[in-house]
Length: 369
Picture 1 (cartoon, helix red, strand yellow):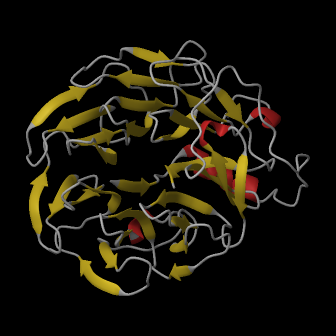
Picture 2: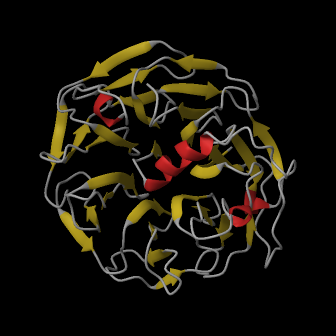
């Protein structure tokens, strides 16, 4: 399963303002590592990808555990947005998501320059299936500061090409998040305030297989666990903050989580189906927290606050280490933009790193080969 999406956050407005200051030279030509408080597993062929926006913009590849910078992509990475890595190690970046008309830039594994670009207007979310075919959600009405309108669509492209296989329009209404399960069923989150829903499509089909509406209120993001249970994060103004889990292959609600959720910004699941929810408010410091839920639990087993400073993005690597991207509005600008890594079942970070450029924020995270 691979997913990527990004929503209209307060950080996006701040990023646009900061972009106007991009001519200010960066005092840090190298990426400084904060002191380590432990060790993390390192697999040379795997990386954590950090999309950093919106000064000059770049995508940084860190070794697992944030032990060092492996590569940095700047070509074609101006205003990088949501990123995703498929099974082959191909990187996808939705550029200019909030303020321009969106497009998807692809980097083949090992490439530091774009391998191809899909000039898809209003690209908002991406996902890939088991064959690495690419799904691109187009959401004209999601683009900020523009007068675009329309229900949107999902385009399917053959892996590693710009060849359009098919376009899905039936059942699509403001598609803001995508996911593909282990059976290659496609899940599309429609964020329409009046009619929010998750639409499910069988492999190769352009007609909905199933529609899920119960518990979908002000949705912002979807994710799947290893057994294909669906998780919907509700956090938009029109709905009460919650995460709802649905039984795989059905509309059945298994649990609705509200305890420990305040202004949720992102969700992630590890290989044991442990759920992580990033909250950008709450906690003792008021800087937010990460609530951690074991399978079937509706209250967090613990909350992470150490190293958390207005978290906006999450990812989990193959060793189940958790990575948190913080935008740090409450901190001096030198201390903002930190990404921290946590071992499973721990509350203190193994390590944190700061972004290279003064005005770049970690807007999206991904992990993969």
